[in-house]
Length: 482
Image (cartoon, rainbow, N blue to C red; front, side, top):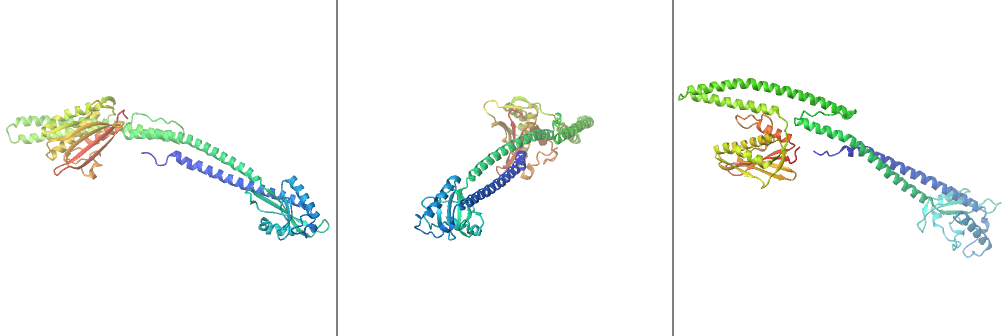
């Protein structure tokens, strides 16, 4: 089963996202702090330029001027001085009154009386200017799309008359935004690099964690399938190494317990089989001695029941031993034909025919021939018994094999009693049976064989007519072995 959230995804969520969030927060703060510092620096510089330029302007000569007075000598002198300062500083300089109308401007073509709408938006700052202080505007976007900032300073009536009659502005583009754009690009590049480094480190760490985890998962799967011979190497000295060592201890204990169990079962089987053989021998002698006597039937029943007990002991012992498969290259179709031949005697006695559905050519498969044959034979015998239960005759049992992608699919089909849906999931449980004298180990042993080969087994059953249903056991095995 594929995990919904891998360790790599979890580590990325735990490390990469917080690192990216922290760096993004740092970048945002750095940009804002830098912008505020550069904005304040530009405002201070423009205030200084405006204050310096105001010393060259005598407000009492400009204040009385009105539209059409651009030819006045006082106006021309102020404009020339403003243009000279503008050329040196790179800022636009203009003088205006309390009504925000122009009195002089370093930009050509600006007539006296032109209204400065941006200055109107800086009423609060200009109140400080007309009170004798300096101020800077907020950064705004000019008509040409450039970001611009202005610094304001008061214009006194004259050098000896401190009355503030006008205000002067030094306006310049906020060139620091280009520097902010460069800083933003640098932060984005550094952030991408940081994410890449964190992602790479996370991938490496996840790889170092998931490899031993997958190894341990595979070892746990082998132990679950009963393969207890292969040891589990610790691999490391960290917590995963401790887990591997613990699993190795568990494997060794299970192997030892399994060995003891098999020895015990072998002893029990030996002890039980000996008296069973004696009982069967004497039952046979008694049957011969009572030949022709009505009591001979009782001796036959004893013999039959002893045979049943011997079969129970044999199946129980075979299931408990669970020998590991010894894979070999074989033809799946040939194995199915062999099983059909072994079933022929039981099928003929029940009046049944065993059909075959096999490909024209060989069907390569790597599996243990003996175990595979035993599993199919068990399923085939069950199919014959099921068909006999409902009195079916003729073609009521079918064995098949076919290629299914990279797998080989083996099927055993029969007409017989429908297996209820609530019973199908329990068919492969040990000791579960619907027969009066079944051991419940045959299908469990089949499932063990299939799982040991890395395959899967499923059963479907449904009605096919008034008298009987159809049941299909499908065994899927990897063609190249597990």
